[in-house]
Image (cartoon, rainbow, N blue to C red; front, side, top):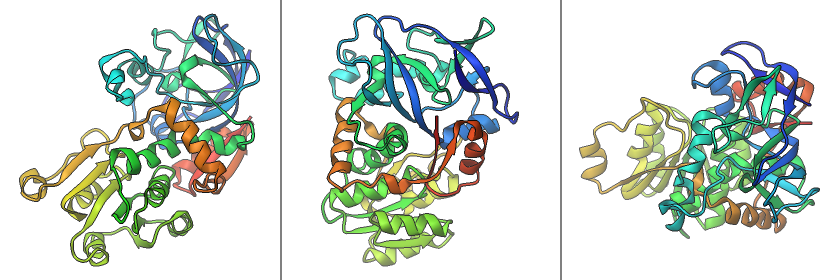
Length: 364
């Protein structure tokens, strides 16, 4: 048995309950979740904007300690500190062989059905299966996940900071460094400076960008963006394209990273990229498109790229991010702007829904 916060229908309060956790199957591990971040995807399901089956344990950004290993797991041991990732790729398919692990089909079952890759769940309540959001379900004090979803890290990384590596940090950093291909001397604009966008700012700084423009409506987030590496900050609004052009010699940015996910900001992202530049779309949801592709993209030679999970190879990238953190290059502790105990997990969701700070983390 373990405590979990159950999502039962959109708009209803999360219900704390004791649920059953099954033993791990072959290739699986049990993880005691010590910390979980609250992401806007969790809020989207809670509010009804993103459809999801119920009952469901939300949460897909977490870290904890391995409590039990299933048969065939030889690269993890009880007591290991791990970051949880919803990208447990297969390693053998066409995409994995092309070093495009983020496009592997195996995790898409976890994302679409909110189960483990075989379509089952290890959580239940009164003999009723409870699904695990993105195949993880970190709004629980214990979970069972594929071994490939648990990435071992140093136990010297604070657990609240480590939790953020599993989604927000990996996505934002990768959007700049991997999907966007930011180079030394580039001008970069980031639209939306929440948990993902702030890490795009960090990624651009670490990649060597010299002009980094952070755009948001919240002054506290812009202040944090400056601390993380932004050279300029702009308040979001209808004139930001002209402001970015003024800051970049009238050319526009080499790389623009759009995280806000609104139709108007997607159009602004494409418009503020220079001729031949790149617009990386991270936050766009269903129904959001790019207006006037011929004039805005084709005739200006721009590239518009979708970004899934920062184009991540989690087994390689998470340890590299930990190394950057330990060297002082990647700031993690500063991203945890509020913590909540497990009994107050609903307050953490409200904090995130209110677009407060960078990240709320729930500690078990």
